[in-house]
Length: 379
Image (cartoon, rainbow, N blue to C red; front, side, top):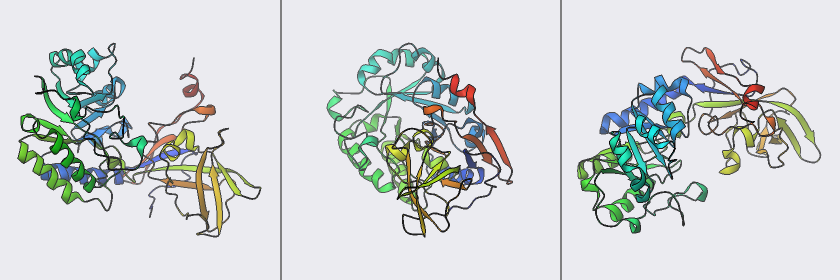
């Protein structure tokens, strides 16, 4: 059940509110894993890049991981610690700058290593190869790097003989919002296919997708697997969670703009699935909504949609104890990750403001957006 420690009327909607106390709670869980294993944990910025909170996160984690130059620069400048980067294919015009600020560079293929490896090593980077264990543990193909024809990582058939000099570690990222049982299965595939390389490595990166801070997550098994791998192969394990850092620590607050009923009760919000929470359409998934139920569970059921021209800009069908009216506030939960980083201005939609509910219950407006933000993305 969502419990709010802020006044939902504190700011004009739409806005994203991050609960600092819940963020710290997640960070303390991650820190306990570090303390009990000696592993290193990084923030995956692709999920959460709210850099105003990086100083707090840096108190607990070792640094950041990036998907390219811009994220790498953000992590380097705002977080510090270790800066890791991986890309399916690096931009030759950017790589010198990437190598200058990154501690670890992970290549998606041996061809990429051949192109950029000497530059990376010359800049003092620690280098690795992303592998594909060819072990699917989920049903969402769009998020499955092990699906047939995947472009992400090198399968064992792409390895020829020994690892090149200069490659000191391997990286895999195969999970998405999963528990430790999926990691156990994946590690079995990694050891079966790539086991002969592991004793020669200095590090092994387990990637992200570990829902470590979820209430039912099996932290004991995670810790046991980290310790087993580190002790067996005498290497350092890295984890790079994104969602787990801010899981259930953020809210998207919206307002009802209009209520229609032509046979199906509809509430049009000032919040768009397509612009503000695109994973609702991509995954797809049904976001948690404070005080609501599944359709027909409560007396009044509405289809919630955004104000864009996209017919499919639908958040979902939700039921309520009371009828919805213009101006009512609706609070969507678990909205810190993959919201700010994916939001867009299709149809000229206004981006949600960003705020923090501090540990002392004060609300801090971090940033608001207007016309200039929309215009300056265009030409």
